[in-house]
Amino acid sequence: MALSESALPDNEVTMVPEGDVVFIGLRVRHAKFGPGTVRKIEGSGDNQKVMVWFDKGGPKKLLVRFAGLERI
Image 1 (tube, helix red, strand yellow):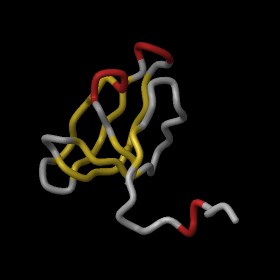
Image 2 (cartoon, helix red, strand yellow):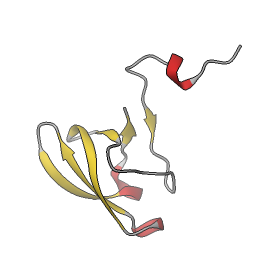
Image 3 (cartoon, rainbow, N blue to C red):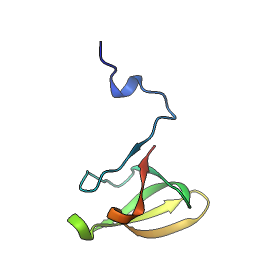
């Protein structure tokens, strides 16, 4: 029997692969800035940027392909 996504523990994280769907409201974690929420998306493909409001660091604009974001 395969586990569904809802059966995974709350602390389970997965990387946001380059080219994967990023959406407003997505909760992410950054190695330096910690957890945050995607609030704005600009561009697409290799040039896709996101504005993430980090819980403790405020807003940061990041290039998705270099950001190393993890879904939380």
